[in-house]
Length: 448
Image (cartoon, rainbow, N blue to C red; front, side):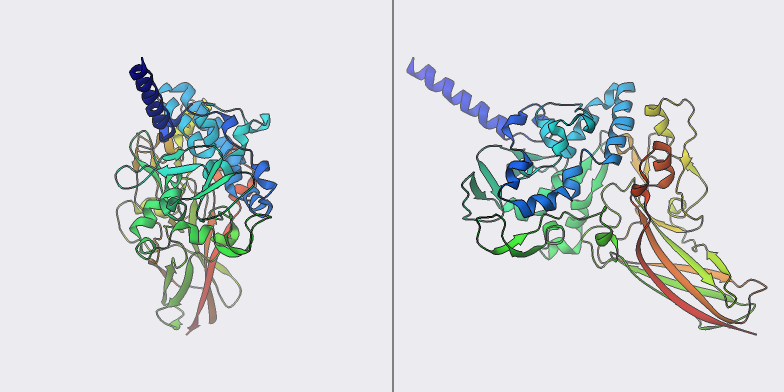
């Protein structure tokens, strides 16, 4: 009898350990909401960090207007028409509202219903992570292990709290923690998000500079009301939605090959774009949504403005990196229930401008912004960490160009979402606000 009891206890313990160590899709329904503390509980001691979190996208990952529209109006609606998409669409919640996913609350209520899914990526979600699983050398698809309870995990040793126990884990100082959600593989086996992989393949990983150094910079202060002053990681998580982070991320310079040009001559310009700030490619993350483009203009001595299209380089897939009057995103017609949908304008920026992007394509070879429906990736023409791209402009001077100075201006612009897509789906205008990344100017003198 005693042997049977011991065996039962061993089996029970093994089952409990197996359940707590699951990650990714296996974590669906393995927890309850009640196992996780609400962010407001953390606020009582960690007011500064809590308020930082409320302004970060971490606190809005489920409630943010574009995320809600993309999820319910496109992803969920697509899965209703194609049941094979149900699993991947449910998986969106594994990163956007991990508690809901682990509680088996999929599809969660809409944000307006005020459920706990609205807590998005909350304090207790991150600080109950005990391990990160990897596959093929990197983590992806919410591959974190969550063990909610009295013990909270973080990057500092020896901390004491009257409310919970604390334990230091090395993973909180490693990029793999971020990669568990900022790398994503879709049902077609396509890596549709790869920010941590980009970092790993770049120079910053080799120098031991993880994501946290830039997105959670440290400053002198207290991490709790009762704590001693120390260097504290600021929970800012500022990135693609932060104009201050985007601004200046790419440095620009430009120059002509000749400073003086005859009135019937040709101006040749070079623009250099250097990613000296980000440890990953720009744009990164939801690159199917993002658009960053270089707009170059000239103003002659009489104040007349001209738009200069970029010179073609001739690489495969370049047509998707030069703004054109083309339609795309036809597959939005599936979830929207529009038969024979022709799509919307692909770029929504001045024709001829250089676009820094990696296009996503559906199984029919048409550009898509629905990452779960992406069958193939196109040319990757983004700007990598510490990479410099050079764009050239060749402009034959108009017959009526006046003598005098011509001023050239290069503007690198960024939008979080392609505007024609946003307009079609009714996304609020702040998501398509043009953020100026950087500018540069130069000049030439026209003479007879």
